[in-house]
Length: 320
Image (tube, rainbow, N blue to C red; front, top):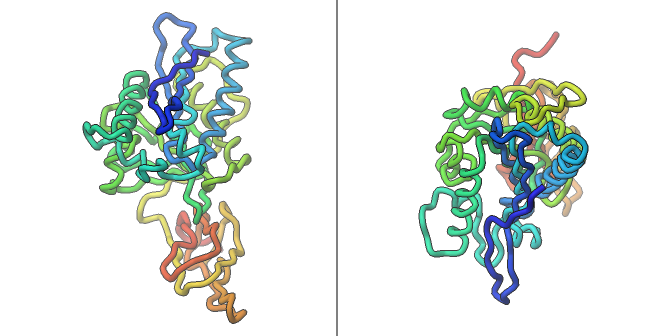
């Protein structure tokens, strides 16, 4: 394993801050393909950092015992926004900017844009395939899923099917995504899968180990590793925009869920309650108007009117 600093800058007090890449070289003089795993663009999304740790541990042991298994090159960027990670914040501290909204920003003299562009250039130069790990915000918990922009569906869907996800969510392009790492890499012809799982500031070990198995399967499927996965991966639900049902809060209050993320629900099932903590009253019994699987669920109980409570992957007609 080779450790290299791809971007380096100094803090206001002069301490060096480095964005580190770990590389496992190919046993072949000409690697079949190169893949990069990346985490920590948002500093509060720790599931991805842990996933990189799992990959590093596995690959380091495999390199020591079976170096011939590495037919391609594997790069891991485990913490690409180190100051935000140390601060536990989504945004880059001091600047209060989202690093994942600077990838298409063009040239700029600011430290944030220059650092983001250097990172993007290094990933581009060393990758045929990229996996970008994310978690949800503090309000929601997400089933392991890959989000695919419709424009890249044909190219990405066969790869996403190999990753042991519960859901593949295909959705139209939003303008804000044009500045993200995933969009810019895909536009450059580098297949990039954006994984979302769990919730921020937490590590969901069950979800992480599920995704980890999917990443090993992806490495085998693409021919980068000659090491068969220990067990087959599950087949995900493929969800198009018209197949996503959303349940919103009709009142402000505290939301108490009565289901869990991943649960299959039926029309008329109780999603939970909205309560008024000052009066001790139930404001609303929230009923699910769809049949399907809950793949996003409210995690933070405090809600305002109009807040998202759940997303349901619709499954057509209910069984009778």
